[in-house]
Image (cartoon, one colour):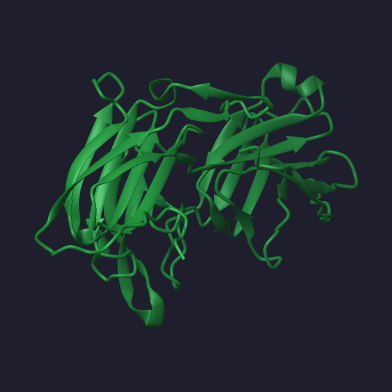
Length: 309
């Protein structure tokens, strides 16, 4: 049975045979990066991404040295003629082929991760050049054995997730900033697995925090929210803490965990909305999962209130 993302080829030829390989990236038929919109629209490729990175590795992602066996890497910019069209020549071998579309240039580098039976394998990891990710980050992957010339249209899929934390009650006047922290935050995206880079079992990644200033207008109304674009991953925890202008802690909340009551599992191309009251009792937070980015799913969680300091 042919798996999704694979190309079905006919009778194999000899290893020395070269084949032309042509990929054309489709225009985007996707929701706007403003996730409050329900409508879908088609956008030209250059309107959505400014850089297209193409990387080909010889072998299978399960191979120990897979990401060290780079066959070719191409970086296109949206102002180039033929942006979104890749022409290459590949031999009668097995390849992993990856595409990344982005607003700013990133890097694809090999990195060791855990394989099966305790040994390490290398995968291609995409690293953003900035700690703040854009919602316009897309990728595609193809694993195939080339036996004939290839002409294929490629659809890029969003490779990040969006997390919103919404505070339903009114923010007190003394609150100056909110800090959202992701525990065990992956440094990049594994193009072979479609998730944040898997870590070694014995090591956690550093926590990463994002700071949001509270404006005067935020303090006189309810439903204050912060939005963070993150890598899809099983986080140890997500917390939001509020501070006054002198940096003194006022109140904090750990978000509900949805995976074995131990992790906050964030899936690719999904919008998670954590919502609840924090400055009044009781503090009850719910998770709304929206992947219009597919179909909304409500998953309720109740957690105990975190008291004020």
